[in-house]
Image (cartoon, rainbow, N blue to C red):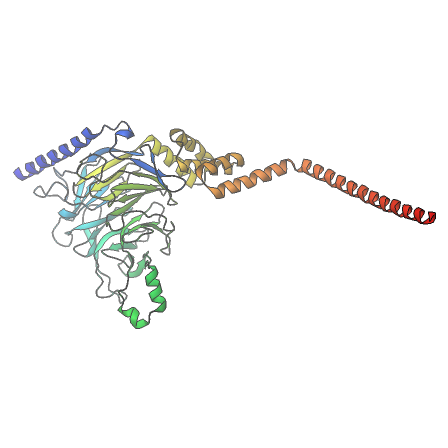
Length: 498
């Protein structure tokens, strides 16, 4: 009991200091008072300031007390180096409490409901780093140090495990150390392993190896390309083979597609994979910290992506096409301000749009709620992505009313006007958005419409001009012939006189 009171006193003191420092540093009333700036991209792809899209809400501090299934009173009540978050369909939040070798489930009210992996025997976890919960409530855990995938039911009971698959297609040296995972509707498991440069390990529902999925390309320099062109096989064998960057995280979106993050790659650090493992985003998402392992992506109901870049201490939001919406937050270099990120490890998005960011060293969850501005952008973008260009025009106009330089709003209004055949308005918005192709297409329709409206007049004018031209030519020819006859008559008269 004394140990428990000590934990609680220290936890309360830490939470009080952190929250008080944050609240003292800024009252959440205006974006100018936030400890970070918010950006979007202009028509040239450069970052420009906009008003706040997300503001810090509260710290979610996890403290275990009372009669919680799976937790013993003498066990640590606080988080220790947590590494992953997962939000299920009931809005329950799961935390991989890696340092304490357990999974904690929080209910919709964000109060502790259950603890997994603390029982002795086969169900005991060791440094779990990844979580996935299926629609029927089965909890899959990337039990990293035990080098397996552990499965629990909704009541917290250990059900089964998946060990390294026995297959000739995996070398003996392959290290099966799962760090993240997802499970599709078929029960197939996609596993990101430590230093898994081969891509995601794909297992079927009984754990049989099905191959690798979504591997990164090997990036070659110009020098390496020349070597492959001119070196012999013996010379190439002495070269150190360059391996592709490893897949560090995986998320299953509401749309059924898999989203991965990768390290040590310059392009396509976030990918949206199709059935064949190809990137549907065309490697558009880059400019993130290249070597950090803590990249994570949360996918909203409309396919928008919130990417956590721990190296830069930023959250970047993209629409379903990989086009940048917002960049916000920043690295906390000892300021202890609410909204800055110290060592973030994972991100999850609630149905309300609130973002939950797991802080690894602080052992807390920072929450960011969307502003009215972000709500309008997401509403317009949702309709825009669904092809409802006309109905998206209203919220896009509201966005421009709040910020006339928000480039995506100009583009959205341009496409809405184009859909409504308002070519002049479309041309104006395409020009404002810097879209040369859209502007050219709109201008072509403007000219075509003008020609259609004036076709009869143009035809009459052209006919009249043609008639005048023919008449003029006829008169000119007759006059020319007359002059020739006159000139011939004069010569005959002159000869007769002589």
